[in-house]
Image 1 (tube, rainbow over the protein chains, first blue to last red):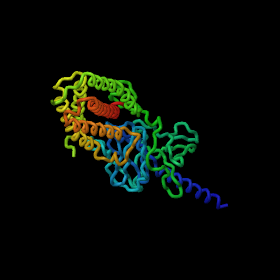
Image 2 (image 1 turned 45 degrees about the horizontal axis):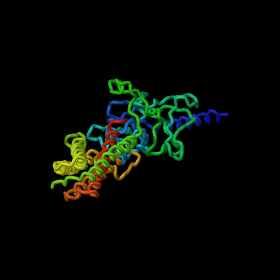
Image 3 (image 1 turned 90 degrees about the horizontal axis):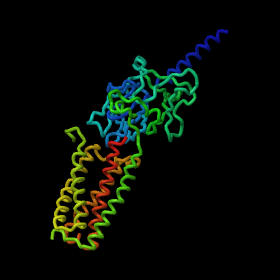
Length: 260
Length: 140
């Protein structure tokens, strides 16, 4: 009967190891806008992650004239143009270090941050934080398999769901949302690339002293930009009328030869 | 590349907008209320406008940090449409400017139709490009 305690111990070790592996890699949300990259410690100009984490950038506005991008040259991360409401998920960050994270069109306007990827050996000592990034849903901890408060991380268009729809949602150390990881390989299953943000992710309180807060407006949201095309088509009618009138008048009265 | 660290396209683009808009008005004026001065004004405004299209386009590429947006071609985003419509407007006005180098072309029935038609098409495309740009910058 000595086997029973030993088996229990082994089982406990397996459970703890699996839990540690799950918590080891997280999907961290980073809000992107004019001109910030905000993780769970907004305003510090830093985005922090642990080795193996993935970053999910949620674009909250369309950029001032030109859309935002996410660039980390040293890690080969280049998102391409991102519209408001789009997301970009990086592959797992395997290389520890400090990197330059920037938006290519707005680099010179200060849309830059420092990406710190802590190595796996030091990441366990990082202080956990719980604050939510600006305009994103707070990571929540649930004790049961209920869906209340959990954040869907499903990437539209992805072949497989990326997260735990029914499993408990547990905030990983550092405030990141837990990623779906393969316990056998430790590889993240959240597909890298573009996706769509949920309405919840785009909502958020207006920054203090901002124009939005003063006017009581909600922060910028993606709008149907094609309304400018509809307005342009409407303008075509009066312009055509004037043009036709000019041509008809020219035919009846004759045009004074220009520069004659 | 941009020592001022500010968007430079808006600083240039209003000059051709104003000049080519004025040229369109003068083209209409030439046909609606024939006077000799209109032709010279069209020439002046259109020459300045077409000339300033070049730095405006270059400034646009400076602001977008290159032409990556053309390589990507995100048709669901307004930037590429702004570029294409503005490019079409530039081509139409440049064509109209070249066509009017022969002054007598604008006179007469067909000449008047081509004169007004090209100018109005260019102006409409310019307005459309401006509306798309305004929505990109202001309307969120």
